[in-house]
Structures are given as structure tokens and as C-alpha cells.
Length: 359
Image 1 (cartoon, one colour):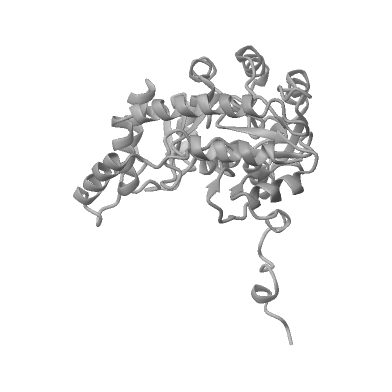
Image 2: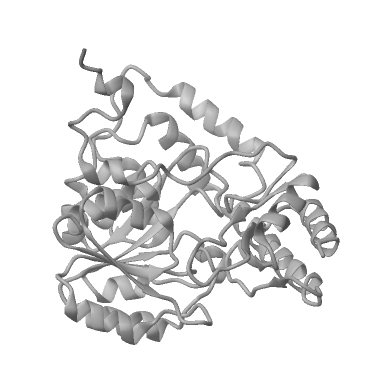
């Protein structure tokens, strides 16, 4: 009797590249203090939630939204001082990463550093792109010279540059980023700026100067809207037109659009919360500076790496203290490391106390 492949395993029609890639590596842990996903610890302000709900209820839910989120793209363009024809909106910047890999990676090359944001590598592997990773320098800076060699050696595709870098929180000099843009030639260069508010950096001027470059930005971090799922690309009109071809029609609902419009009309809360996060980041790093066995590593993002003698022991110790972080110790050059988000002052106090108790 022939077994049903849909019961015993993946159907035989599933591509081998998809079979070979593990699912996104995240398992939720229910504890009081959640510092494992680099989230804004504060919810969208209640008064803005009320305005968003009012606007949502005023919309006709029986009608399709804009074909390409054009109204929202125009609002983002105004906020970013950008040409609306160069704004591409999707439900989360991770969707844009998938589409960019489709745009320039399939049957070509995805070039990035190691370690890096796992979605770059997962999408490259699943979509059959040639994945090339160059190890970061010991100080976590980009290996510019080695990346330039690969830009010349490999078939053009997509180059991912993250500023600030994930998962290290390191920021490179703009001169280093520009040097790679100059060397990129026919490559599509993605400047992933998911955490730029926390670092005080901004690559928009570089994107304006290089038509093969674009900036990825998100509402999930500083805006505190991870639950809504929305991200966008800022690009030249020509590159945006090509990318937009891959975006499914009607991909941003009128409900999400209503909430994001309210956020864009009231951005003051973002600056206040970023300022607190930056101050708290400095306070936490300073408080852990003299730890006898652990090293809190410098960061320009809303998270930092904590290098420990034993990541498993440290991770479980923090869980026992009601704090969940993200293990990074299996990544290149990050032996013993946990990635720790910056929470509220009270959450950070609990973190400091728990780490100080770690031997």
C-alpha cells in the first residue's frame, strides 16, 4: 500500500531547496519580561489607538484597498521627504526581503556578511539563489575589501548591508557603505535601516545618489507597531517600479492603512521613546561594564550582545528570573552571546540585577 506523502512528510512536489531549509528559528517563551525580539517595549499610545480605531470604523470594509497602497505610500513619502513613486509598501520589511531576493537573487547571487539577519539567508536558500557570506571583522565592522572582491567575483545579484547591523548593533562609517556602493556596479544594494532611529544614522542621501540602492524601513521597531506588520522601501522610481511588480495586489488593508496614517500624523511619540531607549541602552551597558565574567558589548541599536562564559547557562538563568533573551551563540564569532533587547526602565533594572547575579 502506497503511503500518502502529505501525511508522512512533505509532498514530493515541494522543491528540494524548500525542504532543506529549517523554519524561521523562533520559539515563543512566556515570561514577564520579553527582551528577545528587539521590540519597542511600549504599545502604540492609547489616544492614537482610539483615533486609529475611529478611522478604521469609518472605512468601507467591503471595498478593496488601494492596489499598491498608493495613499499610504504618499503619506510615507511626505514624512520621509521622498518621491512617492519611489516608495514600496508591504506587510513587514521581511516581505520586502523575500521580494528583493526574487527581484535580484534567483539564479543570481545574494551577498551579505556572517553573521547577519537570518531572513536574508533563509530566503536566499529557499529561492535557489547563490548565497555568499563574508565573515565580519573581529570588531564587527564590515569586511569591505573582501566584500568588494566578491562583488567582482560573483554574478551580480543583491547585496544586503544592515545599518545598524543585526545582530551586533554595530554601525559602520558612511564612507565604508559608500565604498561598497561605488564597487557594486550592476548589483542591487539593500541598505536595511530597521533600527536607524536608535543609531542616529540615515542612508537616504546615499540612496538618492545611487540608483541601484534602496533603503528598507519598518514600523515594527521605533514606531512600536510590530503587531500591525508594515514596512517600506525608499528607492529611485525606476528600481521601485521593478520591485513593485513583485508585490501582490491589495497587500495592505484599509485597517492597517488607517492606523499607519494616524501614526504618521503623530510622530512625536516615536522621538520620545527612542530618546528613552538610547538613554536606557547607555545606562544598562554602563551598569554591566565591570561584570567579572560577562561582557555587555557596545551597540547603536535597541539591543546589545551579552557575551557570557556559557550561553545556555546564562539563557536559563535569565529565564529563571522572568527574562527571555535570544541566543546567538551558534552564529559565527558570537560564541557565548545572547542578544538582549532594551526594555522599560523597570525591565532593565530587573535585567541588570539578574545579570549581576550571573557567575
